[in-house]
Length: 318
Image (cartoon, rainbow, N blue to C red):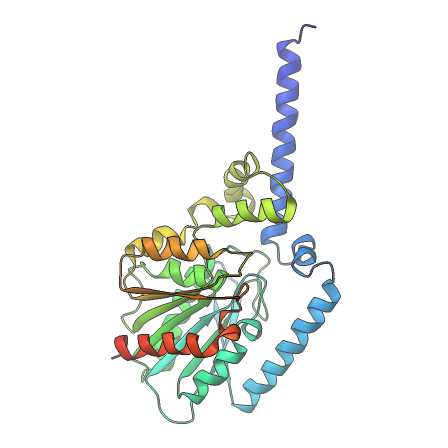
């Protein structure tokens, strides 16, 4: 049977169009604030139960913040979004502030409720960001660290002007928030008040993470979907996903970094923390917690976690 060139071109064109359509859909599901499939998979099918649990956690944390007179702030992002954050100040004057960035489709309550209470007891300011397309902040697109980095640099300007007594800032990110602070680590605009970074369960690059999610969640190969997504992302999302590479940023890091990861993390594997640690060019340490799942290292072993943070505080704060 003879197959014509025209037939082959037709089949090839259909395959490319199909790949482009599927890649576009997956980009929407990954980055869209109102996407449905990814939350469904995150919740193990029980989206209503997951949302109810998250809402209860947020309400509990909001009550705690209100009891401790947390102040609400807002800024406008470089692309016109209204963003929000909260800061709880210590009872006595303090020169130390923890700047906290939560994870993908997460919240400051889910990521930092336990830590905030302890940091407040220790006499630190705790500044908690609602990242774009999360919580109170505007936006419909999650950019995996690309725009969030710019937002956080702008937040840091506000922090420095609002709290002139703060001379020691610790950047603290969990999951995608870890990627955000790692992307900031080598930026020349990073304020001199930033003393070190805590990077908890971050990914090496969004390409690496999406490839893993394609395999684990959808049982799909990275090729040809990921190259097509890379090609389409600037037009569809306004940024290039292939450029979001914390592993490259830490090679130019300007401050020490404490990497933390749970050894039972199957969403972002601990191997990524090891790769980030090995790539990091500045003072660093790596804390691996046995039995801790994704973003669960602090809850699994709070004493070991706090001891590692105390060591960095004693060594790098001025």
